[in-house]
Length: 263
Image 1 (cartoon, helix red, strand yellow):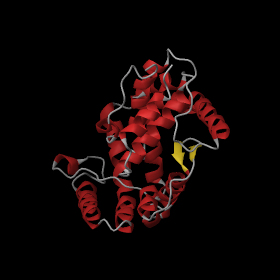
Image 2: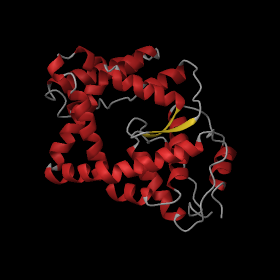
Image 3: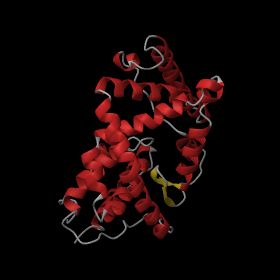
Image 4: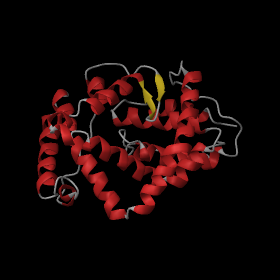
């Protein structure tokens, strides 16, 4: 199979992809690009609803330009100036600040167990972890159980809608795009904080994204320089997101998707 080196991505690899920051999606996509680089332009994966492909590709190209002009230089400066422990603390703080929103989604989904788990995690990291700059909860076995409003809509039976590429955020679906907006704007912690610090969680989130961009710079640059980058990202995002939400994908459907890249 041209483009994937005759290897299909196993579900065990897909399940570890995180939907909110998608940095592991980029890493997995980069692995596929090593094979795709020898192929002609790949067709869009079969079975994916992409009626806005022309607009999506324009947004994809605009995101690449934004990255080259702003995000990549800022990320390189951020990663060069700040040592790894400091960047880690910023990411820990950002993740901790997002937990009240995760708990809210747990409750909206009727998932009381995860809501309690994440509440205890937030309490530990906000106190012993000094407002979350240290991840003491993970050290004692309280790893975050992620969720978002896109998953909440899925639990409520809202279909995923069309595949879309969002400015700055990248690959998504209509359902998840709305979920991102709700999660970003209506974080309970930001609403509860005093005016002078209410935007601190969002600022930490932006810095954590710079840290991700710096960490995965080689893979992301390879992805952005590939003619097949749009198709590969679509494939990996939708596969990983559906698997993460527990959407059953038959083996023959997976084979059809990956066979779309046969040369």
